[in-house]
Amino acid sequence: MGIRVPRVVHGTSSYSPYQVSLVDTDMGMHFCGGSILNSFIILTAAHCLYRPSRGKELPSLNNPRMPNEIRVVAGQYSLQWPDVTEQTRYVSEFVVHPAYFSILENDIALLQLSEPLNITRSVHPVQLPILDREFKGNITVFGWGVDTMYDAKSYVAHDTLQMGEMSIIPKSRCDLLMLLNSRLPTIPTRFAASSMICGWSNSTTVCKGDSGSGAVCRDCPPPPPVVEGMESTGGEDGSKCVDLLCGINSWGGGKNDCLIDEFGDLIKPPPPAVFTKVSTFVYWISHVLHTELEVKGHFLCDNLQYVVQSRRCDGKLDCLDGSDEQNCTKSGSTTTESSFIHNSISTQMNEITPTTTRNNNDGNALIITKKT
Image (cartoon, rainbow, N blue to C red; front, side, top):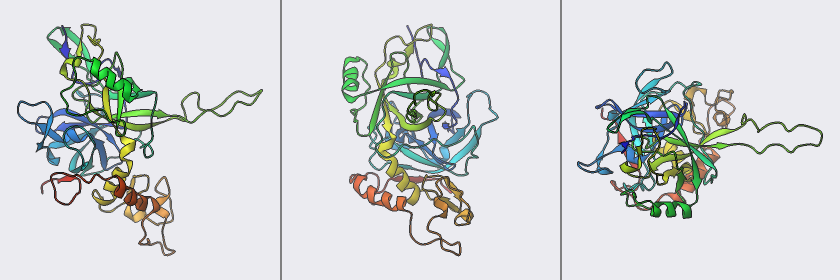
């Protein structure tokens, strides 16, 4: 006999400066996760921004959350006790992908904070992959999992952030494991390799409460060639590796797939977990930040980080990519030309933006703004 596990199962205590907790301001409870894209923007799953209808488990498009109902907590390690690294912000508006239809395809959304996060060693952005980047190997998932079960009917949810490893598997194996699993999720969608990543482990899984959390992949440069008579240097210790946000926790098994025994182990191997493939949506993310979620008084660098507008064309590099000093006149003012990346984003969006949209008449993504 087991218990229901609401989050990452069989993980280890960890800390991630990219992860945030989304808290329901009415209930005061964590309901989803997210990833820091920059000081103003959080990346999460679209379905996190909708509540289930009465008696239903899946979120309903007819029951959206409002921005003022969401509180974002960054730098959090413990859910129970405040951490000195914590920063709390509120959401001013959010944008849901225009082709999200509650069947968990295109399950991605952007939240804009009312005030910027202070970027520190404990709270800082995660790096995005390049467009259409494919990943192999392992994927690292995060969440607040189960710690101890006292008996068959009660348990203590893990107070600290948990981390687990899953293997990225191809579509053929993902489909097979879903078919072989007798506890398939009641989700009317199929795994689409073009916009989703499939992960699986026989000892670790993600469950309700982990939705929207980022899944990262390690990107390490190849080691330099070994010269005869010299020791190989660089790359082996992972010092030059970076974490890339390769996925957003989207969907997987049902509630019965998150049952553990008295030792904290899964009773049965779980079905695969499916993540939104972030690399598919890189241009959409950039397009939204340049057009729909502009931050007043700030300049958006080509690497999607913000600097204060007054630092634009001041002769000093404030953007890590130097884009704040591009297209400047000799007097220090800016030209009317957009950057190459911004122009290419617009071109790409004409190619990848779906023609089918919902809840509006202008073909744009759903945008909900905080009431004033």
